Length: 419
Ligand SMILES: Nc1ncnc2c1ncn2[C@@H]1O[C@H](COP(=O)(O)OP(=O)(O)O)[C@@H](O)[C@H]1O
Ligand SMILES: [Mg+2]
Image (cartoon, rainbow, N blue to C red):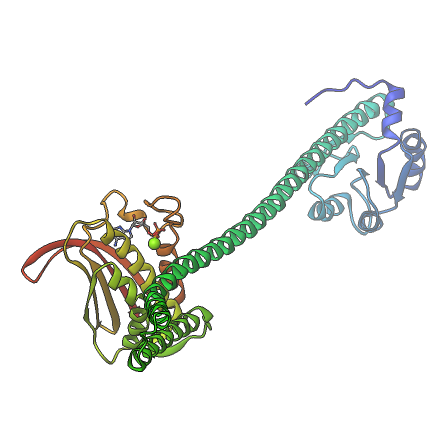
């Protein structure tokens, strides 16, 4: 604590700001003392006993209380006791030569004695101490304010940091939403691309047949050798193939139309739809599809999305099978019910997925294919349809198995859907 050396003038300058309550029952003494006190204090209320003094105290703000002890109604000790109940730290001076209550007063935390009558030297030194105390209090008060301001500033800074964070989080979320959208958009495009590839494939054979029949007839007609029989036979071929084309385009259209409505459907029917879409691909790549399907499994889900999942898994198997030197190219599809779950397994004999990448194949954009061939979106899309769309799970494993006395290895996808 710093000790202030205050000259009388300085002292008065300071003391003028001190608000004082003075209690004294002796009228003459009160008047005399007030004369001196007014040199030092600007605001000073004088009470004629403890009751009035306490009343003043309750209704005003004071920095200093000066009181005598012997007063009627309520004496000084009683008044100080009541004041201390309200304020623990207000400065109190006793102006009395009566030291009977000394111990009580010490206990009440008084700050000093002014002996009667007022002796100016002693008085100034006491006032000086009082002012020092008040100044210390003021310093403490200012320090407290300073700390409070600091806390406020820090809180503000934190708040703005918080707001910034919130903003950042919002931005990131909207960025993510955008990315998710983009991803799902890209997945759809990729699926479309693969689908159009399938359609083109599906159409190649019938178109060739139609073209062969019509150009054959044309040549025969030009040479004048077109018999009625031949004409009718070729028209039949053309009609059949046109019907086939029309049916495949209907199948694809139904599939692409993709009314995304959850409904209960038969799993086998769904797999049949899928097979009809890939039929000609299987033919041209010599892929044998081996089925082991339970007839009566009902699924509550999204029909076209499930078909799309099968297509995605199939397309990968087809790509892998294309690369193998196996004579037999096999695709196994099995379905069954186990513990209230539908289990769908699809496996091929294309050798499996390298162990170092198998954990990554469901990641978006993960592909081992050439840029023009793979987008890395097929299995990601499959995963989100099964897991997010239908509350299921999908796992992949490399498996070794025997088929017709021959050993094979390949990838096996296992889809589990809750019933
Ligand atoms: N049956 C499979 N056999 C071998 N590798 C597979 C098989 N299925 C998927 N993969 C691997 O998983 C990768 C990711 O597949 P996918 O998400 O469909 O993307 P893309 O077919 O465009 O590469 C493929 O590039 C391939 O390396
Ligand atoms: Mg794929």
